Image 1 (cartoon, rainbow, N blue to C red):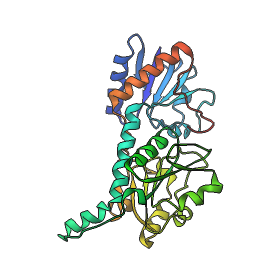
Image 2: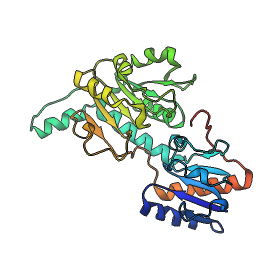
Image 3: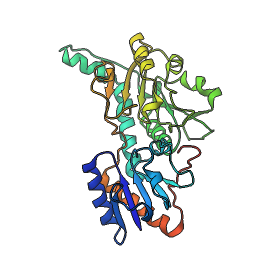
Image 4: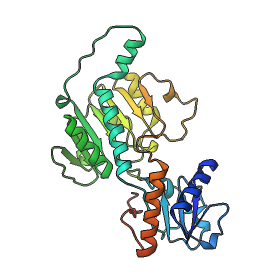
Length: 309
């Protein structure tokens, strides 16, 4: 079987080609530019360029190097009848849980302010409520969101979750649909976004949403950059409606050097690392999915393209 691979960085792309070739003995793995279009059966991609995938007329499946498929669906020329396989696994979930727990606790214990006090050599004791008295909300209760909500609940936070459809999670107050979004937001002193990126969720972290949070709430976005309206967050931070924000994802990545997020005192920037799976683990998961798909015509990680995840 022939596999064509594309990632934006050429050196990283060569590394991925060699990795997958070693994991798929008897298959042929090449980069997009070297591939014979008619021979390619599987395209493995991260942020493919518009039109690249359409040049392979005999594709059986597209593999996203990551849990999200929005970067694939962004291709306006994408073939509509080709399944998309997500790359998910326990390692990816574990990494997201670690990231969410770390930054929720940072905001809960007001570590940005404590670090500022250290820089000023100010012996300033910051006392906060205990976790059960802190309302933390998770937007998106899919695999990652539900797992994050459970971990935060185990730490002791008062956790609530919001999703498109009704979900039931033990020990977590859940809300569903647009009609119940305001009720959900009203109890979120720390808000974590783990929604999939769809037409309905693009721009959902906006001025209207921030205004419905308790004054001085904190926001963590570790889903996708286009969920956030950048200017609305800056205005909300400067007004005090939002106290602090942690951002792992952005409209443009890498984040441009002149973007105001880099220097804003109330924003923590991380370079899309929340659940960035290591390549060896990702390669193994991709190879396993390709083998299963080739044998059966499907695999458990096939996404629902119509829903966008």
